[in-house]
Image (cartoon, rainbow, N blue to C red; front, side):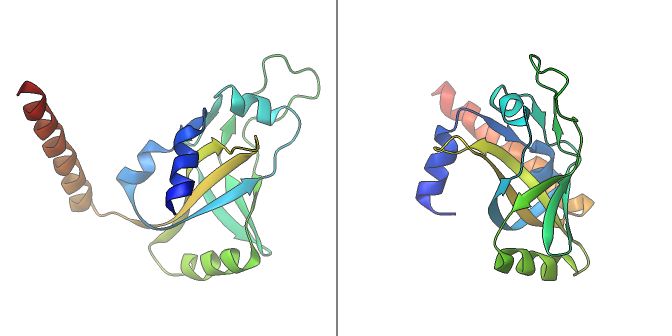
Length: 159
């Protein structure tokens, strides 16, 4: 990710994060993908009514899909409202999909969505990461580092 992409994510009014992913996994590589939405799904995302809890990605027939992503039905939607927890197709280049597919075959690796945001053209994008699972002692170390940073911040604020 370059500096411009980070600026874009910070400017986005909608940032739906998968907070549990950084605790459970080490991020090896990240990709930004488009997402195929239907009907009122984009309106629900713009309203912030989406969740990435317990989501993961899988690859079938050279296409990458996200499973378990919850986009709540649009409040003002009618009979044409969307299904909340359906599988949604992600848009990546063939080269990126092939790279992810090869890495996903190795034991211990998985593909996890980590962020949904709206780009400057008004389109929904998903940041996905190729991840390696953390062991229990890695999780404890992450918590310890987080607590140490919090203590340092408190000490700086008191001076």
